[in-house]
Image (cartoon, rainbow, N blue to C red):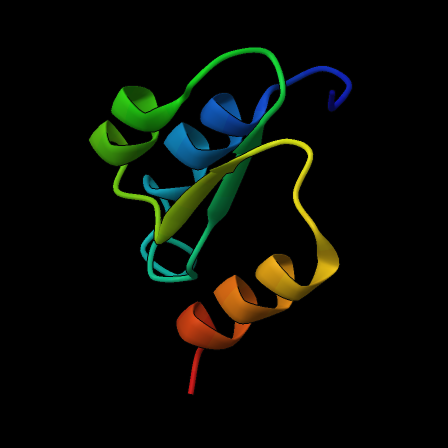
Length: 66
């Protein structure tokens, strides 16, 4: 858990900034299935915690800025 703001709050703030909104975000949730909320915020990908390192590396590679 992040202090002061959760990942969804971060993303809502990020997409309001024209310089930051195109940076891909991968959402991880350990509390519940966040698929609907993540997709509504236009994230690059989402996954359920825990996630193994290989899968995380794969998601980062798929969605990194080129």
